[in-house]
Image 1 (cartoon, rainbow over the protein chains, first blue to last red):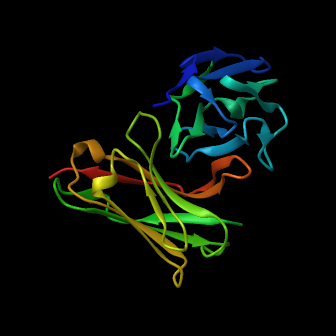
Image 2: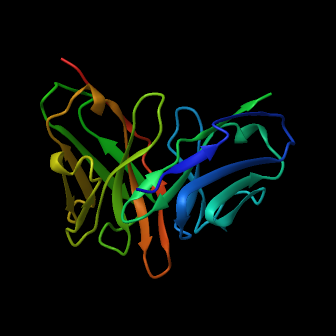
Length: 106
Length: 123
């Protein structure tokens, strides 16, 4: 089975920082790759799908890239509302999620 | 505006069946999207439970397949989940979501989510 490993699992950053979160697959995967943001006490929110397509309404400071076994979510300039947990998700016969990356205020 | 709302008992006895319903508003459940359930144990990550389509087709997480039944009611614009023989390990926040799935376009993602409902398994 394919595994998704997110790194780091925890990240401390400041407002204005450029942040990159990585999602590594245990084997090469297609671009069925999505990213979600989950604020405390809220449902996940779709940010990126098809590895690099920005969901409608999501700020342009979020971007996704990658192929093969390594995919990244980048926040170009961290805003106060971006402190949350981020998950990647892939589909290989059925959907499954990475373990999450928690972004906290430094 | 697509909205999803989960409903069901917040407390279920061990070995019994968990039943949840997701009411969809602002979008017809009979259209071209799929509909899914995802859960999140307290303090942990996300786990897909299953996905259904208005045709009645269902797709279940292999690890839960023997205990899951998903149904869809197009007349009420809602879909439901039943999880049998529950244990404390099934205690989680349960979310319903709209699913965009296209193998031709290499797409599978959850674009609208309900707020979630906490189900605790305990006697």
